[in-house]
Length: 448
Image (cartoon, rainbow, N blue to C red; front, side, top):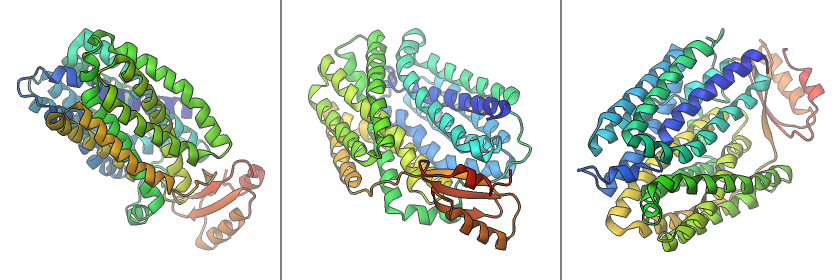
């Protein structure tokens, strides 16, 4: 990467991270605060936690498409302003209804797709996958950080203070976008980051991709429903000002344990068995929670199992989408995947709150365990993922005849397993085996 590419990617990743940090910080504390509101019920608490997922799922793809028409930065500015407005509404609200409205408006500022598209505009094809990995890591790190600092800030600022902080983070994001992110010289459509409407049917009918979409929906359903009831269960065995100690110890331990499994899965092509095993551990943790949520030691053990599985699955599901999706449909597949993820958060909040209200805390975990059984069956019948990765090749301006010849040449390069040449994009979308890829032979066909 050039210095400009690095700075732009880091700046955009920080904007993404701050926005997601604002959304996630309330997860470990919302149920504690909302319990004291006059109109609170467990169902409304769950809705307040998960409602952002519904609006995020609805507006994410349209916002990305609008950025193609009106420009990336104007749409991102608008999304951050909407997010800040929702945060202020939630901060000023003294009722569940007001907080729910604020959270819903937060989700309406769905800028993830526009941020990814702007990242693609500001990076060259050969570095774009690296830039997208940095964006993905910023989301994961913001989630882990939010679970740790959320209880701390709640103890210092209470929940309205966290919402005010979230609004400030949105304004900082606007400043970073204005001061640190250049306007792209050329803003073009990128199939590896943006959905193609004509490809939705193809992607939705792919049973292998469907398994992964259902998987990420269930994962975030479980994650959100967990935080509808876990803070309440934890409060009965530990004072709220010490909750962060549980989260930090469990998260650090789970990340340490997870890393070797990721290395083994990728290096030795053992993705499927470890993936299926992680889903199984997820189910065992939910079953365990239903029995031991009255015990601090039990909660810590089950939370460790849960987050070890979650961290592995969160890291591998996007990778599997990239491996399975057709070379020229990655952006569409990722768009459907992301929408499924946020819709799962909404369903988790609503179902977790409703079950808690009518049948108690144990029922939330029992229901989650049943869902994991379904996911386990889908995972175990999944085809073994190929050991292929995406690669983009700049081809410059060529005509149809040249494109057909180039496609034939590319597929003959050692390590290239799939090639799709898109003339209007001036890019060849490839699926390659990195261990076998002859980069010198491939570079000969690049326009650069």
